[in-house]
Length: 271
Image 1 (cartoon, rainbow, N blue to C red):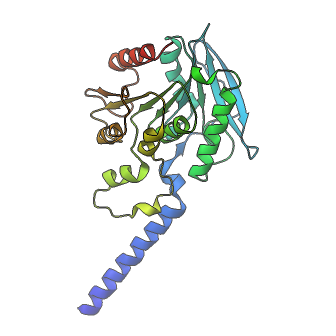
Image 2 (tube, rainbow, N blue to C red):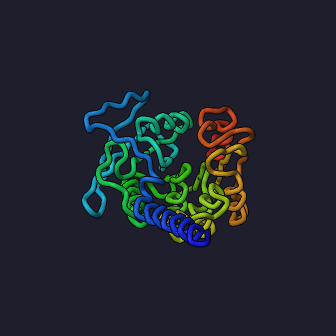
Image 3 (spheres, rainbow, N blue to C red):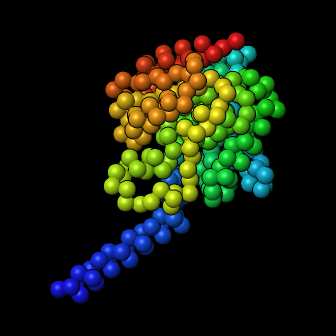
């Protein structure tokens, strides 16, 4: 009987170590869910927009959409969530163009028409800084509003901490990916050091010297609302947490509650 128990727990241990190894080496498959698009794919959004390709430091080209308005109040750099492509995310642009803002939305590596693939968090941050620098060629930095949705929040918060945009907006932000993993797997089955993509939104919000506004549905089924409460602990005077009552992770984008709140935030931070 003792021998059987030893054998059983040995098998369990080997399986656990195998799963940990797979998680470590294939994290991108667990975290990112890109949809690819043919280079000749035609977008069918209303309003004025143009496709842009921006070359990263290693020569890879990231595809983006720039939605234009007449006499814009500024530009929204919109860093989207971990799934889909600009075919879907481009639909959010009219929320902001209707309020008089240009909108610049990039696809990450391997998403949509963007080249390459995501290999590390450092690579993600370098890419986002390159895109930010690209925008600064067309807009004054005090006209740039950085917005991160879900996983895009970690990249957006770092941009705000390392640069001087007009405003940082976070939507359904994880405090960090290890923190999110602990909430998703409360038994702590997998050690947090295995997670190579930290995306420490809270850390960078603490370092950001720009106004911060956070939107979060209190019934978010993916990124728990408590993440934003934890981020709130790093707020400066004047930073804001907007609780979207009864709303989940993505379903708030087309609601009146969100539309009125985002309009107020942008109005309060206009010149």
